[in-house]
Image (cartoon, rainbow, N blue to C red):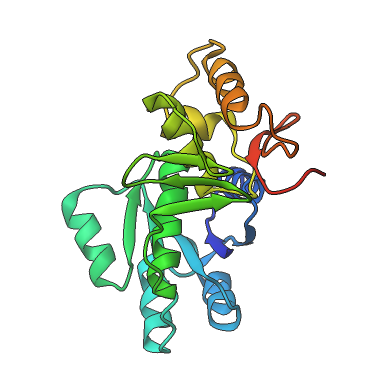
Length: 226
């Protein structure tokens, strides 16, 4: 995806750009509302991530100006103003979703992905496939090369998340938040243990490994070795 972040806090913007690029997305940044409006009008973005409180032009005014110009790019509003009335104002101004600060990056990423799918009109996939590995989200069946693979519930969630993001680096933080529902580092080797178990089940005995460790970054499910 190609994303535009409109955020006047340089540290927050840099963090978000880095995190989005780590998972394979392209992110541009504007640090005030006028710059954000200019880029939003001229750029071809999949989703805009707009802070509500901005210099030169506030986020709601920015969104209103885009909508007045018939720019229908989905907008996720970020704001420290998280009361119900604040969220309603943001949505009525033309925003598509509203995420109060502080936020979890994994939640932000999930919301951005939903907005992107909504724009493209794509339905949520129920079956993920990478090479000869197949995971059915509805039946919870996992097959590789025509043979069924038996996974424990946590292993299934781990593989499901990795396959949903096939070809992208999945960080340890993303796994902790989305597979274990942790929003802190438990300081254990729980991820390493489950990755090792999962790898032995889906890759052992097959010529082509699919589950890869990306040193210093995280893990990735992909077709083919590099």
